[in-house]
Length: 557
Figure 1 (spheres, rainbow, N blue to C red):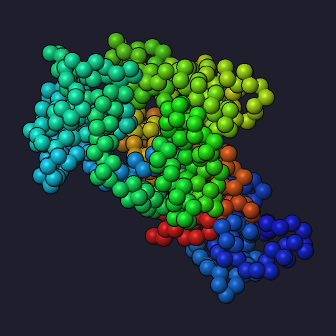
Figure 2 (tube, one colour; figure 1 turned 120 degrees about the vertical axis):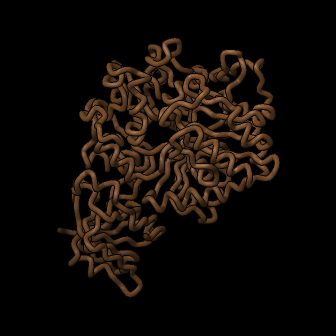
Figure 3 (spheres, rainbow, N blue to C red; figure 1 turned 45 degrees about the vertical axis):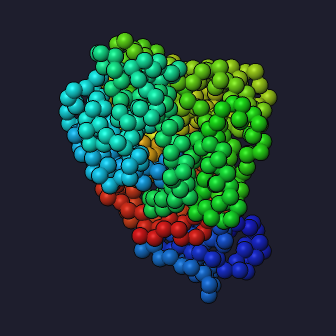
């Protein structure tokens, strides 16, 4: 193997090592994601940048008295995982509430809320997240559309308002006390883009679908403002991400106030992993603030704000995804359009005017088509603007006619492989087999058409673990051992690229991260097993051993 020094030429190469490296990894398998040197044994970094790649023999020349040397003992080192779509502070908040992802019945959840209510102070909100009615062993009794009624929560928490967010984040279940505080009664009309689910007698069940959830979450937010600590949420999220090998987190929508906290932390050198942030605010607020908030690599490369987030529809699990044809298991519904397409188009105009990417949540085939139509229209009106890398977040269910449009328009499909295996048990119920095969989580169809497909977890919708998501990408295997449309599986290399270089490219950061090359950031994840070669069923047992951000070990198992 040969070294690839940061400086070029023989004299420059010698000059590159006039000072020793600050960090050396050796005696490992280092998968660089760089075709010029795909696998090397050793890597050297000085400060936050990689300065050389090569052999163990060459590594000896990079080491000085103060160099930190890590013997990999044959372990696999890869470019640091980039979480391509998640909700950073929500992850921290989730870790401070009830984790309902493993609940097998509604009764399990009621019992957990009851335990929390006994420990809560009077008037405190009890919050949790992660429940999914399609993953329970049996439907609750009584129920409406498979969702429970709030009376069961009222019995165990009569005085404390309860707010339980659906696993998708696109529905909320509340008790009577929460509805009372939110002013929700049988006469409350459905807000635009949302639905208050009611029983046969016209009474609210407690389920608030899509934008109706804001009726209760807005009241909770007012209480939370004086009872929560954003810095603690950031700390919790940071620790979890680092422990799972994540060196960059692409945050899928934060308000300006949260970005203010990120910026203050970046300026003080307090961020411990890289954040790339989408702004989530109204068009009026954005128009007045986009120039002020746009920043690239603030705080020594730790914070970038250069994208806008919008929502075209909801989620498939809560039947909020906007479809071209009705749901197979709810023929009277095609889902919900949660934001006015005219407003989304206006956001696109603002993005063009101020140098931002536009990132629009779209899950259903109708939602994806509407977003692609908006993008295509704006691109035609501005032919001088090239390489915009606008994104569709999720792109879960597509019409066959729209699959090639991603590559044709240069639109990034910012997908989450873990959603495929997590959602598969109810996808056939919602869509039927023909539509599911045609366009559900069609990674290979998109890639073969030339599209860039990113990867992530949408945390806290799913565990933020890249390894679990990687396994889903290469196996598409469900808990019962079946494989969901195996022709759409990624290869090991494709899955790793989707979590590294592709995500970097989707954020205009491929020149500084996404592969291990001289001059790029020394963002590195070291794994206990070689996920590129081990038997597929061993991938979930792999551990993150080191997470290195900017040449510094931020996590060590």
